[in-house]
Amino acid sequence: MKPLRKAVIPVAGLGTRFLPATKAIPKEMLPVVDKPLIQYIVEEASEAGITDLILVTHSDKSAIENHFDKRYELESELIRRGKTDLLEIKRGTTPENIRIISVRQPEALGLGHAVLCAEPAIGDEPFAVLLPDVLMYHPHKGCLKQMVDSYNRTHTSIIALTEVAMDEVEKYGIADVEGSDLRIAGMVEKPKPEDAPSNLSIVGRYIFTPRIMEILKQTKKGAGGEIQLTDAMAELLRYEVMFGFTFDGVSYDCGDKQGFLQANVEYALRDKALGKEFREWLKLFASSL
Ligand code: UTP
Image (tube, rainbow, N blue to C red; front, side):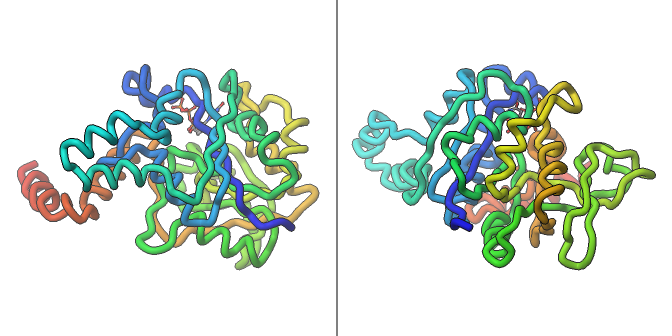
């Protein structure tokens, strides 16, 4: 199996849960503290050794590509004003070891379809998929890096899983796992608690063998009339073993307002420059409620 060096980030969705904020701004550009979501994800991919990032995008989402572009006027203005610290921050937006390629998904036909749109750039290599609205926090070793270490041992597809409360399983794709190595036996999309095989939800980081692309080409529309990645994963299980991976860290579903707010609070508390003052304010504020 070839080494893992490519990753797909699908950013062509409609972001309806965040309207009206996402009417003119892509959801992936919403900031957590001072960085847009997409930047955290690109940094996580870079840390994991990814060199080729494929953004699956849409004509309404050019702000994302622009974010990773150079802005000469801004740079020369910062130089003119002597703001070298801000210049460094600006220049650090795109990690040096990463090439970003864009492909278009003309219509939001579902996550599975978005991943399939990246096929010409993936070829017959294994690849990762990172959902940009899921932030995975770990102080030293990001989620994808942890998964790549695991992939280098198994050379199989690997799916990140996180525990959710049993009464919340209806919101997520839930994995049926076997044994301590979390071999995946099946997947159920949004089950009722009484039908759920576990409380391990599929959480927005995946590593796939290239066969998933062949399967996606045959995958018909599923739940919500969309081409579902979960359906293709269930089919992949008929041919290959797949393992679950429970991330040692915290995940935030920033596509959801609660998750987004919580991520902002936690990242602000951890921020070296802001954290101390923000913590004091938050304590006072919470005690006044
Ligand atoms: P979501 O379903 O969470 O995002 O997809 P969404 O559809 O944009 O948001 P809501 O549900 O309407 O609020 C997860 C990721 O997959 C991308 C989205 O951009 C998001 O980053 N996606 C989803 C695509 O690129 N194409 C699709 O057809 C669907």
